Length: 366
Image (cartoon, rainbow, N blue to C red; front, side):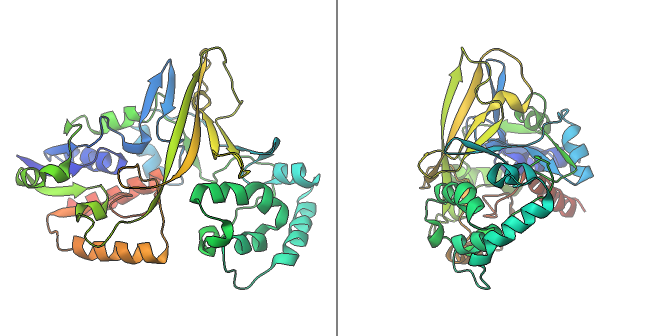
């Protein structure tokens, strides 16, 4: 009945569906959740497009990908300029001259460089043994203790001295007064939210929601020539060799009817460990919305267990070895392609997801 069955209506699956249907293929997309768009799903609440699974800001240097997403909806000029709140002190992110001026009162790049080198001097290490040693050797004590340590320990649920050094291979430090978090040429938020993009990508495919492929695998495999699987690779193989680990997130949402502007910025990070959430998102600022009321989300890092949403893969040595074991099994599934962040056990930015899908479809349609 179908040329392709796509398991998962997130970004990877939707791009594949759009490209394949455009090429004349008959495509069925099934999704376990009650909605399309995966973790970039946005929902309109009282006139505000709410990012239901955390903030997503599109950014890329790839003009082909930028033109592709803009062919579905127009993107605005949103620039990601988060604020860090440490015990009531506010600092600009990424680390730049505004940050350094707030920390030390320096005004010129040379002064900031001297201060950082001075702070690094007591912590230099040729072979850092953990994240704390790595970060201190890169930026020194003030930046580390105020803006990195607590946030990182909350995110990963471990002390910085227990985390591997490779998590922070480098720390972007900019000696300009530029608060743009990304250096990419193209960036923005889709007007009307991300769900509208996925709806258009899937418009020529058949879509079934609230459907578990793995529970009906034999039937669904029988009605399609090929399968594109975007779910967790270990779940596909019934966790035969064990469970891949992730970090998860919990969200506390609140609509503030009597307040039009809660924090003046889309994202404010809370970097002290004692504050249980890592950031507060105020969604209306993503689209410069001037409607009355506002909608905020507090984001809490959480230990992951089966049944929870998987957000950040724990790419340490043991998990990567386990993933490679599953990848070897996947090579024997001749009619099944494994793609996307869960199937590849990889943290992807959105433009990377799209490029990965492009690469697969280009090979598939040759």
